[in-house]
Image 1 (spheres, rainbow, N blue to C red):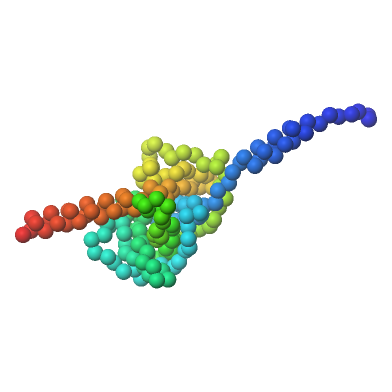
Image 2: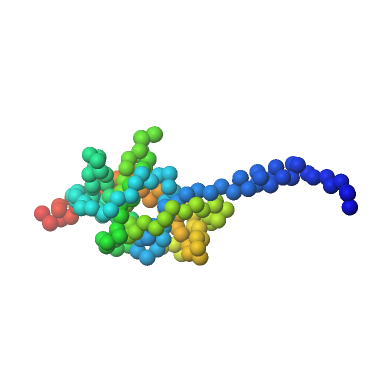
Length: 189
């Protein structure tokens, strides 16, 4: 019974290293049009209740307006319109999630708000649980999707904040809208 048992100390170290390799990222989940979406928590500055917005003429349709956030002008985007769906109705639980997005100038960022139906929770999702974006069947552009995770039996779409809130692309949409408005005015004259 008194047998000497050899242990492999390196096997234990490998097991600890393997567990550490299972990286988890935190995501803020929110509802939009009956679907659950999420954004990486590192880009989120704060969450505020929906308040009166000031509309700005000649902006792309997905920009709902601007808000004054402690003296700074912050544009607010309607994600539903950005995804090609009808505008998000304002309800009792509507919030504006303030997100920091990169600008065209290297190293600079701008705050942008997005309107959501409700904020759900902050979840830690292991990277091993995240599947790549599907190449078909998505209700939004595939490049807007960073991945899809299954949480508590439901799918959560992880959004690629740099693509969804691309300042360059939104600026181009505004320029196209202005050109269309100018062409329509010329036809009326």
